[in-house]
Image (cartoon, rainbow, N blue to C red):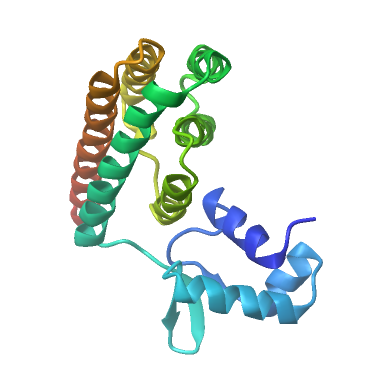
Length: 211
């Protein structure tokens, strides 16, 4: 059974609790069927990791501002590119086949942004594992944990889902060819396009709010 920390983190990651939502110790304990003490400890840990922030006496799910978003994508691009380059060197034939299969399977869920977002996380995590570098995997887990603080997935933008899978395909092909520089470049391009899409969506939504 998952501990309180993992349960709350998964709930944030899956959008049950979104940026700005207030987390109440008693409600969390009841929802997850655990006592309040481990919930309290979990909330303190998540606050330390900047996943939660104080709002008066309450704890709410943190929100990333523009600068934090840019910083996160910068770090993500560097670490993910390294993972792709190492995967091109170290991935086993079985791991490459799993990555290729993920891309094909994900084409069946085009048009479902939330399902694609979950599939996208699995795909990237598989690349991290294929790097065969445990320290890199740990750092990328921290980065992707912070990604959960984004209120929306960039995959909801029109046309982004199809393009994303094409970019995934290019990454897999480079890894399969054991071409480290090409894998790194394909991953950097993928992250850059995702960031650009997110910025455009944020600008569009800001215009709608002002309108």
